[in-house]
Image (cartoon, rainbow, N blue to C red; front, top):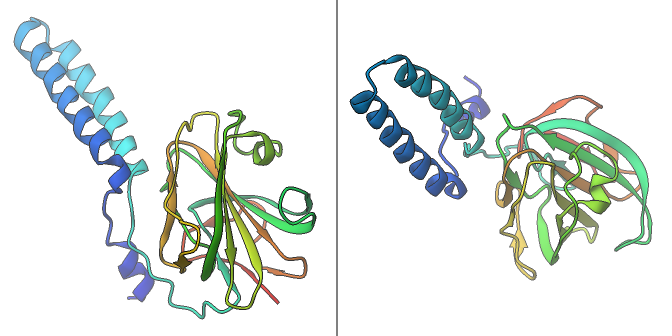
Length: 229
């Protein structure tokens, strides 16, 4: 069996979801007990257990945290920072940090995707910048600039600067960023976590070879999205 498939089978729950899952499970069991004990008809009990068990399983799926290892060559390689779907591949004018044109690749994460985020490249974190903003739907173009976001600038061993942007979506209300300025970072390490539907943008130098296409599904830390020249 392929080594990567074996790695994908090692699933664990992300620490960001431990409290949420525990509290919601306790409430689920408490309400189910009350319905079973004090309501004559068992229809409300069965309906409640069925509906909220499905909801709890969706939340459980959301907080999955697969242990993944990228086994390819990491030099000048850019891996997907998140599970999801490629929604943007285009050259854009980035006037906040670079003040020039950059290649932007964006990954949209639905409610059913793993929401852990990985570093897309090896390097050193130059800075982390969090900005408050709106909560437009994450797949809209204006979400990259107007939504609440966290920007992580990484300088690769070759001296290239790569910007990774975590973006809150219409439902997401919390962006968690583990990256710290001045620290070395590596592919396979967690950059952060975004709760509920959201998006991650990666800004790369022009001339970078794109290795994905629009609508393609990505697997965080495993799918190669680009190769820098």
